[in-house]
Image 1 (cartoon, rainbow, N blue to C red):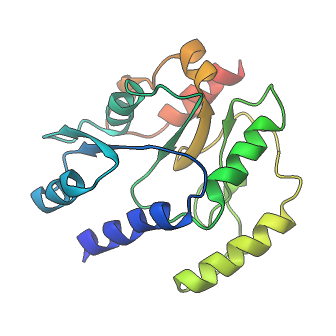
Image 2: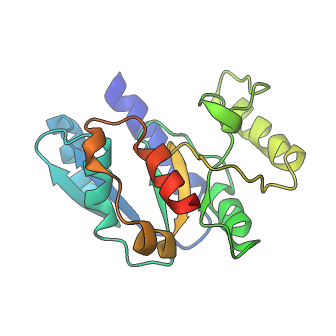
Length: 184
């Protein structure tokens, strides 16, 4: 069941991303079934680690391959909705001082959590997201912490701040640390 859920979530990227993009997947110690499925995907750069290195170290493996002006860090359980990437890129480009942008979600800590987000299936999610996109204009709200469940980062930030701090082990607070280094 979990394997099917991950496949569904990855399909949302292909189905809902209209902007030019490339996908780098860090297989951070997944099951053999997932690894085989990833390796069979065309157009995806796969980076495989036999064991789970933790979130910061896994993300850093992917960051070593970034050669674009912007990049996305995204958890494997994220389901994206139509227009997600183009809207986030428009938001980050709206102000040259903005280096990290994250979306609203039904579940995260802090100001990215949309307490009104209630849906039970993909159609309801897409419908809700479309309305929420209009409700949250202007999209840009400034705060010093963005949860890295899904973020767009300008590569200048990466060059200035460096990679995620792997001292955070399996994960938790490495995104806070990165944002504070970028904000300061």
